[in-house]
Length: 284
Length: 329
Image (cartoon, rainbow over all chains, first blue to last red; front, side, top):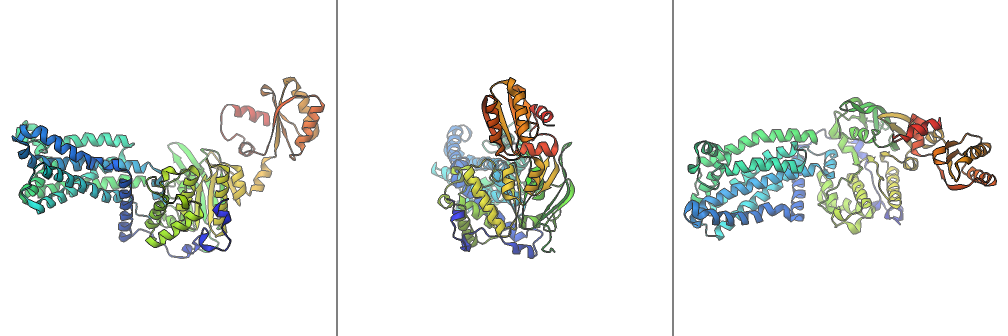
């Protein structure tokens, strides 16, 4: 009945083969940098296949930006800036910050889910760089941040937003948003590696994400906040990122805010990347 | 670096502790090149833990292990290049198709894209999965997943394969296919270390078997050696009347020359048999004595009996065990 037994003898291509010659070769004792990059890209490919198969994984970077942009602009526009049109240059960069941060959460949650799956056991016994199963999805998520920020800009432009920074300014803003997403994702990746369940990771992540976005200049000018709150909002790295995106998109200017934003991102990476890698390696 | 007589797996005094529990408590294993070595034991005996330590999946807490002469603790990356592992639960990616899975694992291990594709197609053909090649794994049956899982382990054609309970939960036909594949691998020169709960499976496949219980190796040998140490078939009859038990036991003893084991509460009598045909003699004799029988079974030695014989306790410990142990001794 089975193919295995009906295979004609002598047909070498149809047989299980074993490469015992490997025993006579000198085998590498570690993974080279080139191999690490190749393995990371292969696992990034896997992550994008996953996104394509489960479109709901992209809701947070597709439907959500469309919905939030329209909602926030029409609800708060008149109250905060006098008109929807005047509010758009404020809220669009703010929403990009918020959307990218939301997209980061999924990075950690999905890593946790991945680690609970059977396929992760196989990654562990393969002769691959231990970091590749973590790095691959992080590379693939760059696509998510790009979709999120481009769509938010697109929705804003459809609603009448005319970024003063021109194409180059908007392009720079999107680039900064992607860098920010990748950097801040390390926080949530760390949660992913230490959390016990995906739901737990999601809970903690939301608890961190909400203060970071709402206690910032994303939706309102910080001048209207009480002193103590304003103090926090002004040092919040998310505020600096949003200010930098505003200046890039609205004025096409690379100001000190861009520097602060990049520095903030670098600090986050410097703290959370080693933490994540360490606790991830313990489970790999 | 190694010679042809290097053992494929050589473990000495392996120990794994979880908290204050010693899951693996000083196990020695010597797996020769080109053989199928079976590790037999009940759930929780430490089989999987042992395999995981040897596969670099769990750190070794005590003792040492070598795979083809390479130290498992220190040369993990080398070991992983020599090893294919297929676990109890299919470790393939649910979001990808069968082909994509094999491509993923081929590419990750440095095969070129065309080479990965070629080997993936061959493996799918071989494992009777060509028709399902482009279907998502979520649509796969348990047997198909298991076959794909083994195919994924084979894409780099490793010289050593660890199979952790490869046929647990499979139907008999799929189990037979799995056994055929394992035999083919061995014909090709592959060394196989497998764990199983089934005496039958170890019997069918393994050249040598180690029996593990509570983290300790309690016996080792060929299947025949183990069986002869364990005992024979037995006939169990369920009597219609409890009062007949003594007469039935005496009748059976007269025929087989050994003391049958009665269970009065269950009106049951277990008769050890030298040869299975003796069952007929016993049954005929019981009918001649007018002893009514409700049901009967003839059993080969079960894993439970292997354990009873080797360890003095049965494979799973509930309250019945002590009773049957006393009865047997």
